[in-house]
Length: 475
Image (tube, rainbow, N blue to C red; front, side, top):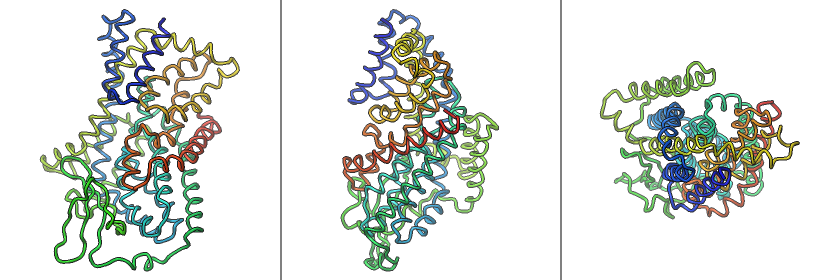
């Protein structure tokens, strides 16, 4: 009976969030609470939840301060020279432009937020694609796949979810996977080079002067400006003429007369810029990432210290610090709220014994010859399952069952957790990922066209990550 109730609980959770009848946070709390009563363990619900919250608190802290840290780094202009450098490197060569798209998306993905990554990447690269009449699905496909690989960072989402669901340290999942993920990123760069060659063959190479010859003294420029409320808005900036200034573009999308946008991707005049502190911020970020990889301190402690230091040095006045924290509060609340809500789901699944009974059933269903290969099985399943269901559904609903089945065949929990993040390159193009609608909307690409173009390349990239993990003995 517990086996059936467990699968019904997971199915109910998945259906409700995929049909958008409930938010993930509400479903993570209410559905397991209801089923806890069904199995006659309602009196123990509080114990299950408190135990889960205690286990998940470090993960929530890590996500909270990582989002604040990288949000501040974007605010103060840490990535602006990178954007400008990539645009200079691209010139008017389709190969360079597509490779530059992949590099820019991968770098900006360090903030762990797909929406921010796509806003910056598209606003910087879209004008080049339009001017050269390059395929916009190439831009969206490369950006989404690069972001999918980088989304496996501990503060990006899936790794934290895997750590949360299996009660392991996110660093123990991510750090050993770095070589395999690096191979996945290399695969994205090779793909972008090949796609760039195809575009170059179709279009040829123009000189920069030929590309810019249509510009007038009164041109429009897409800029992404982060307001005090933390929302990123698109504006149409008039760079010539006597009036200057900016005006909103209706609906947050560029208008037809903005198709010949210039090469500016980030507002160079936003008040949060701190050019005099650039090298401090760069050194702090390198030090932080080095400390994380070397495991000098727990990741939550590192980002807590890093966020506090970044805020204090860049914004010494209290009102400015509050404004920056407020600007990123929505992302923080969404992510950390999900983590604490997951304490109910995982707590009930474990506490009632449902996950054990489900694992026993799954162990019996898997052929004996495949049992020792549960790492490979998990990696292969992660590719379609994280596309057709949300990360919440896969990591909180399916992964614990796979981990229990793996343990029964002698496969470690960490190995299962590492294999579970192999499919993220495809996941970022899933219709269940809100950020992908930001990407196709800003790029003026039909979602169906993006999907048709991207899926095959994203699946290939995911298989590269999985194969590299197996080859290197990580999985």
